[in-house]
Image (cartoon, rainbow, N blue to C red; front, side):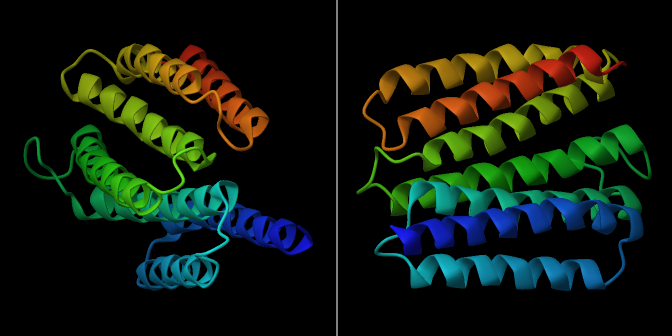
Length: 205
């Protein structure tokens, strides 16, 4: 029990470090950012693999969220600085942002599918709630960006995406009543929904 608690705290520390460092990638960029993200992702993979037989859902979810957060910051920085544009040509912040979010959404969903398949023997663990949190946040942001390049405003798109992810959370919570760490899972859904709603009410076009 003590070893599992320490492992979870290590995963939480990893996530918090990634959250703290990601804004630095976006602001400063440079060649150090890709290298640091690569090191972080590999470190998380090694730590998770070493505990593969006893790895808990909370621990795995925190490692995954930290990796996704850092990768998203790196992709966004590269897309906006280099002018990635799947919706036009040249440097256009809204189109570059939407292009970045397409890539980020692809990485998020594909990594979720891989981890869900890997953890198929433990379908009642709490990590699905973390996957929902990451996928939902990216989905809402992507819908907002698509609305923005269509001329309808980011805020309108983000607000349109929030009800979708809230319904998904409700379905998952209802479908998985026997989940290990049920109280923690409900907290994740609740805090995730609350943060998305606050953001939706706060953003302006």
